[in-house]
Image (tube, rainbow, N blue to C red; front, side, top):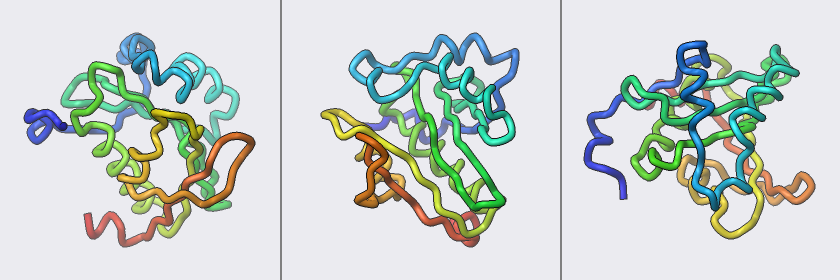
Length: 162
């Protein structure tokens, strides 16, 4: 159940910087979640390989980094894909994740209009599928290797109605 303090906590998405880099590297998911998400070090390294396509964002609760995300974007092709999303184990189940995803989706719809956003998940016990379904993503019935694909169609009016 979400923590009472979540109603007064300001969640925001910010760039990865020298000031928050070490804190982001220290964020770890619960041990049982490590099979579902790559380390933050891995995510940063892979983003370096495609700096024109991969965007990195740090999830803040007030002034503290609590999570990290990466997404791949090709606006010319209207292709957007959530590569990584994690919250540090001590920051989970406080509503930060759902609020961060909502902020990100609103930013995408405001900036890019009508687009489709995808993500993949592994169908093992404890996977994040229910979290993403709660955020509005739906299973497509498609797979990429062993991973299931979820998608969400955004509308340019999404942010206006938020």
